Length: 417
Image 1: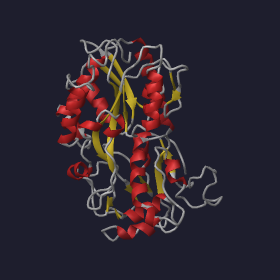
Image 2: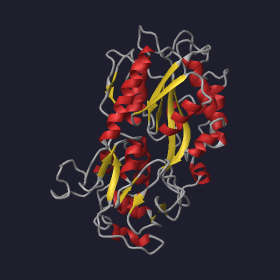
Image 3: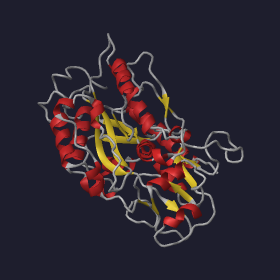
Image 4: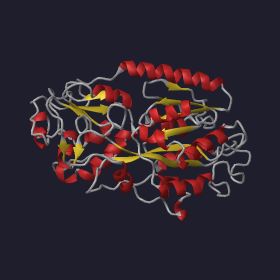
């Protein structure tokens, strides 16, 4: 029953190609962005209804492809490193991407490779990379099973579902934890998962890796990754030929879908269970379509409380310190994280009127100072705690700070085109 929403893939490919053509012909005032599909509806609303400086595009490719757009798709690299987005469409190696969204945190290896490619000897450097959290988010567990309307799963139940444990493969096995006493059918649970690399998958992996150790058979474990098949590979049992007729290591009863929108659409069919970021259909506000975990539904206060403090001043020059570390909570909703932004400190043209640098800094300022709070809430995301807003402002938006976007001492005649 594995499937991918080909209509969504085709549409995404058409949009991506259109944006590439537009970006190639546009001036520096057109800001090319893309990446994670989790915050895509939020960003696209901001970019079309503002307030916003410049003309912006956002192509949803998934976090993995989005990071590559910024890190590996570097016109200054020799040779340039091509990549494909979630639809399989190649992104031109000569196209500059100004800023991307990613729920997948930057790794040390990615940062090292970027710095080597972006600042090569004998070529005009791009300058420093900046990584910051944009908004916080829960990862929801939507479900649809006739008769079940108050599903309340424990950590153990979730771990067993995603590891294809023999005691949690059909709805009658897990529905005993539904508060309304309803009993599901013996129909298999059809887990819907992201087919492409995804930051939402990575946020789920944080939870599975932290929560499931004691609930899996000896020698089994979940793996931290933004690729779902990698996440579950070491946790799954040896599948029979009947369970995995396709031979790809994933139970045939599970369902692949592309992008947050594809997952949301796939979850509309009966007998399904999956993971997705908040959207218009699955907001986390009702237990009738989204499972509670350990009795908890996600609330903004709970997600904010779960986030650690921002890095201390002495540690802020390290880009890897800017994604809040995951800690498994015991008294609140446990699957959460942040969607992040990758951008440059320096842009060609500096911070002058009509420049890409000025547009990027204005967007980040509005995101951080409360201008977009109504839109953040409307899309069921969670504003960062005030301490994070202060840290971002003081580090990246205050002109006198050496790490600030467009700082003239750091960005003299260099930057991303």
